[in-house]
Each structure stands twice: as C-alpha cells, then as structure tokens.
Image 1 (cartoon, rainbow, N blue to C red):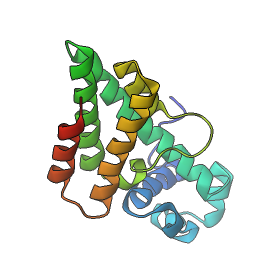
Image 2: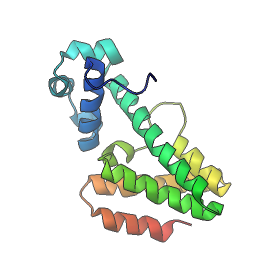
Image 3: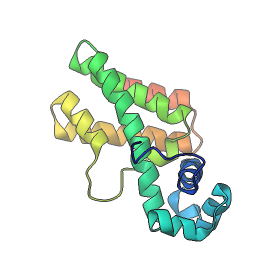
Image 4: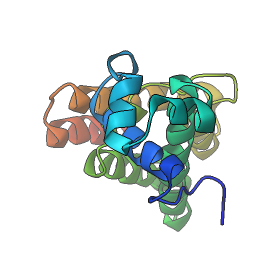
Length: 165
C-alpha cells in the first residue's frame, strides 16, 4: 500500500480524514489540535505521534489532495489536442474537482515549504512560460479562495474561463 493513502479506520487514517474536512472548511489557524483529535476519535498525542505537529498533519493532507488534483489536471491536459486547450481544460477540471470535493480553502493558497509548486510547474509547462504559469496558478487559487469565502462557484469558474488562454 502506498504511504500517502491512509487506511481510514486506523488512527492515522481517521486523523487524515478529519484534517481534510477541517482544513477544507477553515483556515489553518482556526483549526485546533483538540478539534482534530476529537473528530478523529483519538487523543491529541496521536497527532504528534503520527505527524509531529498540526503543521505536519496539514502538510500530509495537502500533499495528498494536491496529488489527486494534479493527476486529474495532467490527465485533462494530456487528453487535449493542443497545448492551449490542454491548459484550459486542466484549469477547469482542477477547479471543478477542488470545489466538488470541498478543497477550495485547502487549495486556495500556495503550498507551504520549499518543495516547490507543482501546480505552477504544470501550468508553466503547458504554456512554455514559467511566469505565465505563476500568474495563471495565482488566478486559479484566487478563484478557489473566493469560493471558500462564499463566492458563487459558477461565477468563479466563469472568471477562470474568461482569463484561461
């Protein structure tokens, strides 16, 4: 079994599922260790045992969610007949996935740490321009952040469609 797919009935898996739900609904600073533990039906010590910290748990679930997102976006880009259409399709497929799964808040900010930004890298490759990839990734994240803050997903999607090359 791959390390990044938790077994949902294990304490580690229950923590990951609770974290996806809570970090998807609230900003990082508003999620508490005690609430995460309570939702997962574990002690707070389990968070530190399995992930080292709340940030470690956040980074774990963020990486998992990003993997699922990027798999879909890469598939959409690869299925298109031309690079520009692939980039547009990837943006919209990724947006729809993030909104549908409740990942808007979680993915509406750039990743923390120094591992790089795979979304920006994917979009830069589609446009053969690192700067354009950064700009489009920022717009995509802003559309998700707006949805997380209560904006109509259809309007946010339409805004992405309007700017997607």
